Image (cartoon, rainbow, N blue to C red; front, side, top):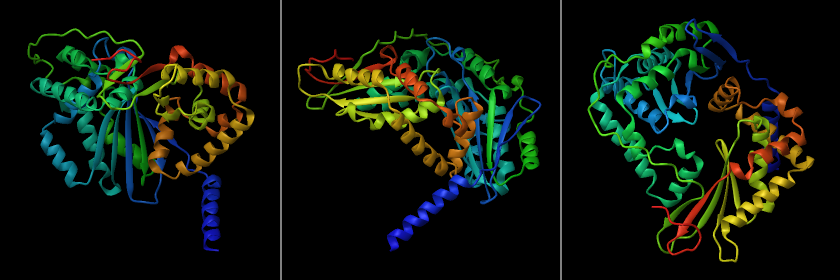
Length: 417
């Protein structure tokens, strides 16, 4: 009986989550072009903020991979106005303000979480980082080395090196040569191009109303102009250093040699093409990982891509060829209407629960504002023909990045230093 009551309670919560409408997103734009999306939630005295800056392909010059990561490191170690970097960190810790930043594909993001009573101080701290950070050319070499050390740590494990190599485009991976080629002027130029209010989106969630949010954002970020992207230290010159030329990207497949005795593995990564509908991508993320025809390969959905993995086994055909043959067979066969209906029901159930989580709501709101989000209305009208057309486009053989772990002495795949 207790089990039935528990199941009934869970079903009731799920049903309530599906029928209870979420507060409508409120949108306003500052005179400087900064777009703000507000999600009111007065259940807890907390405020969350996410600032997103779009990065376009032309913002990172050819051969300068790692420029966004290096810029973020310079922000983290820089003084802001009259405050030293260590004073900013101490102020943040004493006030209980959680502030994180990272370089994501296609953009730079800052996440802020704070008690609602400290929201003015927290947004002011974010504004200090964005608007008033003073880049010191004397820190450039130290942060350049820190970026490369981070890349080296990621490359210690052979499987991690393989996943990093395949899940990112070759031109997007920082290398020793590309980090070394970034000049002081290029760093300042990147900051001036990207750190602009008219290229930014700010998502707010929590215990504040519309008028309160307008006042808060105007006071903290209303003075943000493109001109303020210039560093106060921009007249200083960076230390002279040799400029290594970036090495050409290795073509697919990418083979990583492992130590003797380590197991072999092959992978195929399919980045999501821009032409694939967000709704198709959401359903294929559910359908492909569970497709039985791929066995013994394992499929997984990762941000922006589908990944298929198979352990290398003894046989007449190379493991990578077998994996690609299974993917191609699934691509050409497609899915049936029953598969579409099942995946759509699973997506609706998952979406109902995700909307109860603040971070998930903010992520959905941000993606929709960027034109990458999934809406229930478009999900209802998605046809089987469009789903299978997007599957064929996504798994087009020319779109696949392939490679694997090769045991020392194996005949499959040339070794990669």
